[in-house]
Image (tube, rainbow, N blue to C red; front, side, top):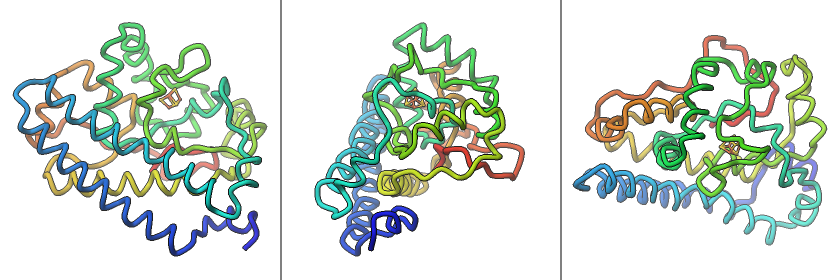
Length: 262
Ligand code: SF4
């Protein structure tokens, strides 16, 4: 199968599909183990450390499996040449960021150590609460964690941020600057990291469902704001209390703008 066709169909080999299936199971087990450690922890610091460790051990799989793909798949060299993403480019950091609650907690732990980032989250959260992704682009509302054109939490950034790999920087720019991102043609992004990210998300959500805690996905900025305003949110969530607001927005219309949604 030619590279273009593979990209378009996001078609993967049986071995690659088996790897994704195994990944869901690995992430599920890691999340269950981490949740048990968090529930057994004696204080907030212990709880946070156990949950941050789940994120650290799962989100990094996006990069690991993508490197594996590029090194072993016949399309790897051509895909690598086509990747447009580069340091200093942040057009896509104006998207809604749909994450699991585990990821939101990990990001919040980092943000809470930086008063400037905390302020940025508290300022931007009311502006993005419940708005569709295309509207966020059209209003050019940046991620509150974007600082001097770069991700300020790069090593703990969510899966979806790691998985968004563009083939055309001009389209990324157009989405942000057109003022009407819904009118643009759908973007083509590298399918493998997106699919790996989804597999990780399924593993985490499945484990959280089993733990009988809120397991739906959330918008990162909104969930981090919740934790910053009420640091006991994490302990309450672990006890099964409804703390977080599910990801969503009023309109059912979908956008062609690049998504960071599961
Ligand atoms: S978390 Fe980092 S990579 Fe993700 S949207 Fe925000 S600034 Fe960009």
